[in-house]
Image (tube, rainbow over all chains, first blue to last red; front, side):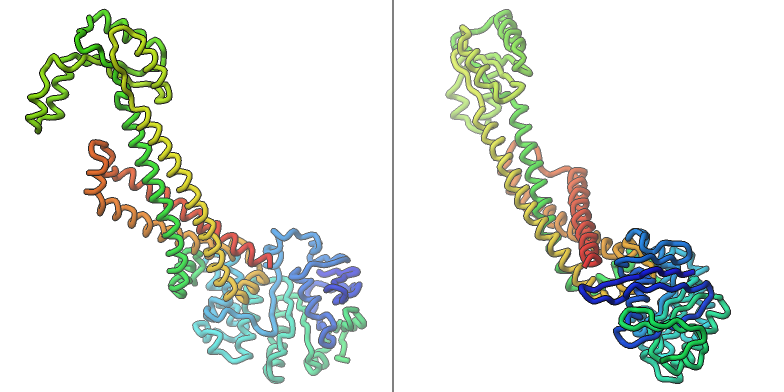
Length: 225
Length: 293
């Protein structure tokens, strides 16, 4: 699914990602951990091609991400679901409209969009909140909407950048449970950057540890160290 | 769910009415200038055509001479043979007197002062190009029986000069205003883009194309152009209608007023087209500039 070889990204003289290589198989759930500034978010942004890769290769689903022209980036990103720490919902659109956004970009028929949105909201347990606006939701509910938006187009890959960072422990646990449920039911590959040691330690999933942009540890059933 | 860029653009205009009014106002000022310039320019062209189509040169025979048909035909053939002349019309002494009577029918004193034999016979000549009037005049002056030659070279050349000057000044003024309007549209749509920075950033991350992001902003620019054109055209038309009496007396005898409805709708189409182009390019450039930052 994902093969990174010698991946490098610099911001001026600062090496944000330093010659990093890893493989992630299709259908895996991987935690990306490390201190603040270790390069987790940069790596997520490289995978999304929100940042240009300075050197190295990155192959995702047989596509060489480094060679995608700017004009094709939108199409590439449509195959990836993204969840952010700060949710990034559109405040002037209700839950249903926020979740429908990735489908609207694809010009999918309204009927199909409605049924896909309904299914996504059922998955995240927010069927009864479809008419509400983001300001009327709790933090956990808002993140659930963001997850529904990430899965509505049934992507093969979900990138979650600190999705529990703004949530209390109990809600964070429920969000991870939801992501794992989606991973198991839809066989989606999930890469989740997190600071939450408790979530990582109780999950017994693969953990990639970054430090100063370098991959320092890659363990199956890893712990937060 | 609203996924239509046109309704999105209209909704955004409704949400920030003062910005929309500012954009439409500046667009209306520019398009008013363009519209007025076009109408004045077209009117000037019609006046020029009117003067060009009139007999531009009169060659008067000696007042005691009544030219024979052979003399007239010989002179006509000679003139037409030069290729510089479109038409030649003979005006006999009687025709000249009848024209004089028609022109002065309201003035009995002038009518009494002139009798039928007093006015000379003449030739009314229209030239292919007003610039050739002088050459034709010189040629006619050498003909026996011709006493005097008069032509309106000055009227046509000064009209041409004025029309060209109006065109140049108008083009420069409209050009400057188009640049200013572009900048204002860029600024206003740029403000709207900045206020939607988060939304646009998210759209890019979830796979929105440039076209999807730009479409509502381009439509917004197009609507500024359409509404601005309607205001500008309506103002120009009202000014023409309001000053019709004055213009008719100023242009007495020159049949260009009132302007034909079809012409005015063509002007509306042209003005709207210009507004749409300015607005669409302004909106498109604003998005392009914003996304490149």
